[in-house]
Length: 169
Image (cartoon, rainbow, N blue to C red; front, side, top):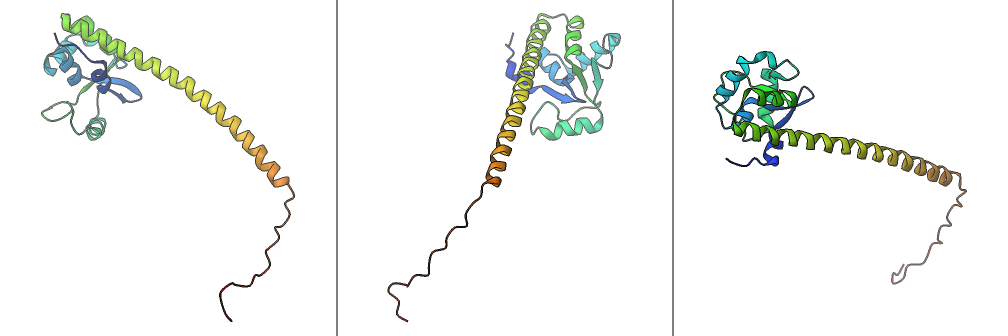
């Protein structure tokens, strides 16, 4: 059984409709089954996949995704638009795909989604700290500029006209 790299999984997670999703073709590749087989299993268990677990991409969404990547599993040969699975949808797949491979893949995917969530939570914390720092810096600069504006600055004395050296007139 081939080990699954978290980096590979991260590359297969896209943001569509403001949700992190994985496409049916990428999941099928990870599970080592045909996309058609994966989609048939989903259709046989469609009640397990409400719209917040899985949805079909629109033509525009599919085109946008394809244009982002020069090489990917999004190319050619598709007769239908891809299905996109949210984290909950991927978790639900583990209930309908019962191979050892499916179990290990789902564990790796869930760990990757968790890592992304933790990173984003830390990023939000960092972002809010940066905003506070910027606000504080803005106040300091405002004070410095106000004080500079209030200083009476003497007009500089202009140098007297000097005689040029080495030139004859």
